[in-house]
Image (cartoon, rainbow, N blue to C red; front, top):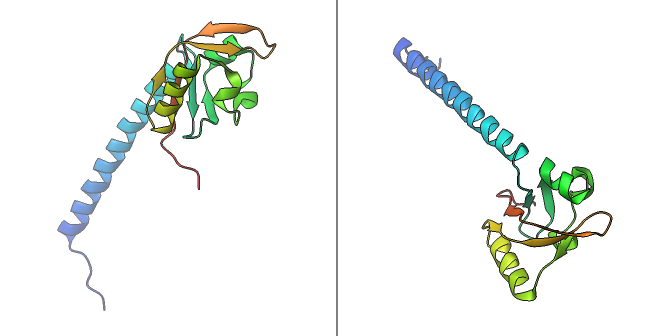
Length: 129
């Protein structure tokens, strides 16, 4: 017969589960707070993968650009606008290295009107396999 855990061992395991549950609740609250901040941001926020393909845009982006989040998802950030070559290279260097790029970006609206804005591009940390 296998050794059964002692009462003290079971009690310690229960305490550990309670700590993990508490940590999860705190993490979830922080995630919700950050999520709301991104959703309500007065700035356009674009999250891309390391190759610049859009994974997420916030409501301000959709308001400014005219693209829905579904339309923007999967587009390459390059398809959204134009920049001088030097600035464009710097943006791509930052995105491909996993950094956060912020700067002026001349977007093409869905209707092809060119607008100036300052979105933040952030590659996601999750890598697709």
